Image (cartoon, rainbow, N blue to C red; front, side, top):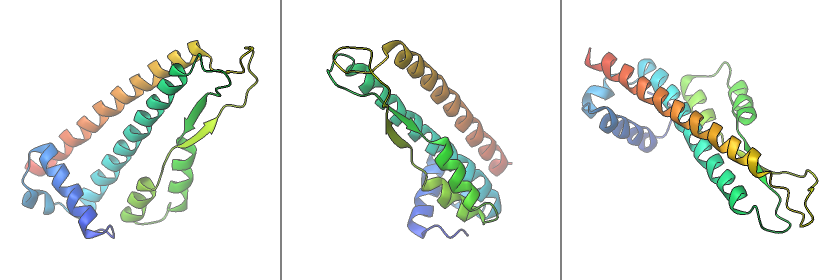
Length: 159
């Protein structure tokens, strides 16, 4: 079993069981390396979905503040933080990887570029709409990937 606290792991197993329509007992027989592999992959997908959801909200805030004098647009990064966290546990166990994934959060930055507008607002509305469309496509793709992972796990467990 992993080093993740029992309550956290049990919650994960219960959610996974409900999502895949498989009994908890049958799923718990898969605990260990097999479920750790899928668990880390599923954890990563969940973390990426969280990040994309937050990023989409930030873009929406930028768009909503397009007419706010002095507003500075914000953006979010995630990939660099994830990469650093995973590099720290490169030779670690599966549970170390799961913790690194779980501890990864997006970082919010304020755009400091000069505004070409007289009111000091630096939101570039066209760029925001383009980024919003890109994030929505990434979110859809990530959902499809997560669904595929759950389908593979369901197939492997049911046999």
